[in-house]
Image 1 (spheres, rainbow, N blue to C red):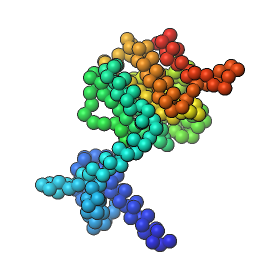
Image 2 (image 1 turned 60 degrees about the horizontal axis):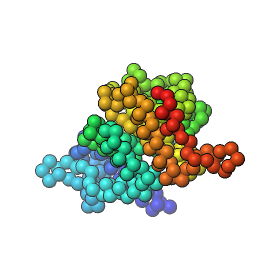
Image 3 (image 1 turned 60 degrees about the vertical axis):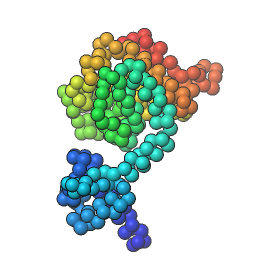
Image 4 (image 1 turned 180 degrees about the horizontal axis):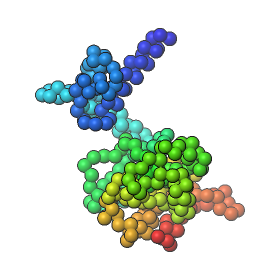
Length: 279
């Protein structure tokens, strides 16, 4: 038992060292890692040396600073390739981004935040970083709102207590009453919107993705700069496009739609048709 505890502690310490690279500058001194982890300098140096030998970190030969190595990329790639939503949404997302000229993102919920599985950039929404692996708040994003549709009002309050609904801009929804109203409208029309609620100058349209059981398992969005998303002019077009994409991924995951009268199951719900009839 003592040996197991010691091994577990070693793993936890190694993971804490890797997590030190997830926020802040990409290259760190040993002292920076010590500050992030709370570990001793000798322990930190020993762990960094071991992680370097395994390609989890690498050390710059000139500056002596450490950065993440290539091994985490290999693990991340394998994990993504094994995820069913990523497999079914990847090609579709790439084609959609090229067609509408904007960013296309797919995310799942992990506890009280959304977790990006993939993103593609259209020519009107360029990025110099990837979103895969990043986490964002549920209440301040279109993707997050779609994922919250999987929960009832009581479950949402248990997951996100009032203090968790913190503002990021003046437009962030910071009360459950406002969030409930927004989600009720999103459920009715089949898509959610977000306009400068997480960051100034950004907006998106998102729709939920369902698995074979009918449960909301992921969400897909079309996003970009406020001026190019142009919801005043393009909301109907983009809503229809994102709902059709969500329906396609849902079908690929085995979703056949809600049961129809006198049948065991009907076709996908056809939210895209509803989106085409209202803004």
